[in-house]
Image 1 (tube, rainbow, N blue to C red):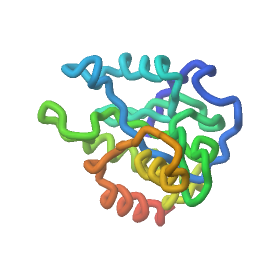
Image 2: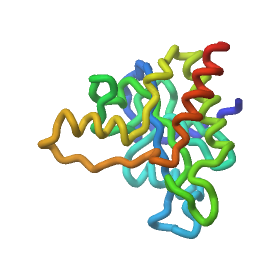
Image 3: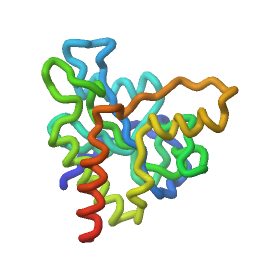
Length: 182
C-alpha cells in the first residue's frame, strides 16, 4: 500500500498529539459548487482550506490514499461527536475521507471497489501500527447521532456520511477476517 503525503498547512489541524483508538469514516466532494466535476482533487483540497477542517487520510476514487495530516496530530474532522461514551472523537480517532457524493453520481457507484479496498488496507495498517480496535471504526453519522442523543437540547448539524451506500457489512467482514491474520 502506497500512501502519498500531501500535508495540509498546520493551521488546519491541532497541535495536540493524537492518541488513536479508532477512526471515523467520512465522504467529501465538491458537488454543490461543481456538480459536473464533484471529484476534482484540487477542489476537494480547497474545501479543507475554506472550512478550516482536516482529515488524516483522503482516499480518491481510484484508491489512491493521501496523508493530509501527520498521524501523530489531531485532525479536525468529527466536530461534536461521541464514540463509546467518549466525547471529542478528534482527540482519539483518525479521520478518513473518501471522495464521494455518498450516493450514485452520473452512473458511478457511491464508493468504488478501489476505494473500499484501499480503506480496508489503510485500516489494517492502522490496526497494526497503532493497535486501534476494529470495533472503534464508525461513520461520521454515527458519532454525531451519539452526541445528539446525549445533548438533545443543543443544536448540531446532522451528518450523513458515509451514508447508507457505504458497504459496512462487507467492510467489517473483510477487515476482521484480514486483521485476524496480522
